Length: 473
Ligand SMILES: Cc1cc2nc3c(=O)[nH]c(=O)nc-3n(C[C@H](O)[C@H](O)[C@H](O)COP(=O)(O)OP(=O)(O)OC[C@H]3O[C@@H](n4cnc5c(N)ncnc54)[C@H](O)[C@@H]3O)c2cc1C
Image (cartoon, rainbow, N blue to C red; front, side, top):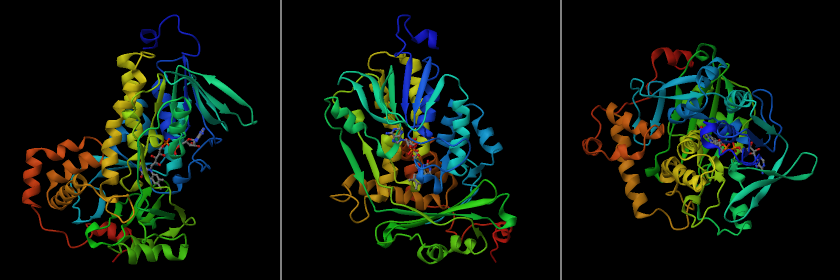
């Protein structure tokens, strides 16, 4: 591919790509670019650990992370064999909705045969496994403990990036493409205005969501396999949105995350963790399961959950050779677990558009920025869909469109509790395997009108074996 897309007179800097940020998005973007350049330099502020260990620049790793099949497929397309490597390292692949015990706003979901899946692992393990495969490529060079400071170039074209290395020295890296993957704290909006471009449109929706998470050793009988357990809020009750997730991960552990919007936040108090799960959520199942699990960590709390999106694709002008991906482009409220999947799909779009249009072709960076707005927009609509209703989340409250969409989604969720076909269509969208348009097909609209075909479940659909393994009576 490189031969086909790189003109013979290309200078060395054009044959170099620089990726800012060496986390999930940065690694996948680096991988995506290897076939077009001689060298990809990844600039990362942290020192990256050799294995699955925590690090300062990834505080969210202490919280539950799931990778939906729409994202897992994109990761595997960029890194063939990664699913097997992850499973070999201890990650689980759970069939959905088969191995999900979830209380939605409209009742317990039934456990239908596999139509989709999730990959479950501690975030540090997920990153370490992907990182090891990406960095095995000799064309990728990691510059650690170095901070990106700004772009070099003009409002028409980026030609490189300024960085500060670990010894405090500043230097410029010239590049044929710069990818910003520096996450929620990205300075790209400032860097672009520094080049003379107008400020991008941005939107924030902040429900005040607080996440509290704790690692547990599962009861012995549940260590080899247990479903995901998820208790969701019901927005119709007018209370703060409180939710809980129990995810089985490597080494027989459960990572349990509890969260609450403004006025319903969980605390960092370890003694209060199981109580919150039992008494504040709409069903005590997670609290009951915690009674039989052994805490392995303190409670980690984060408030870095605001939905924030930069609409770079709408900018009247965009410089050549610059792309923004991952949380740097759109950071999502994590309850739907979409950030990793959207980033992977975006990295795949980057690779595929470069393949189609050609490396260094005028306008290709802008094309990528516009194309990634599609998966970003799909996840964004879901992330803010409920959040806009919480007090103080937006300046003016939900729009009419947002109210109509929420009413339809509520009806669909109700239908999905007792209709396997609709549950699959809904999961097509929540897994990010397909776009929301599938929910507007006439057959889906009719089914939503008819409602569930089976009666509501009266309690969590755990098997007798799972109840026993989890220590429940
Ligand atoms: C509490 C919580 C729970 C979540 N749960 C899920 C989930 O279940 N499923 C899911 O898909 N997503 C989840 N997410 C979202 C997911 O964590 C992010 O979408 C994902 O980490 C984005 O990857 P990224 O590489 O874009 O950014 P990050 O992972 O944040 O990485 C940014 C990297 O850039 C580096 N960096 C920052 N600034 C600079 C600089 N100036 N120079 C050099 N390097 C820099 C940082 O050190 C870091 O390594 C969750 C997020 C949170 C906060």
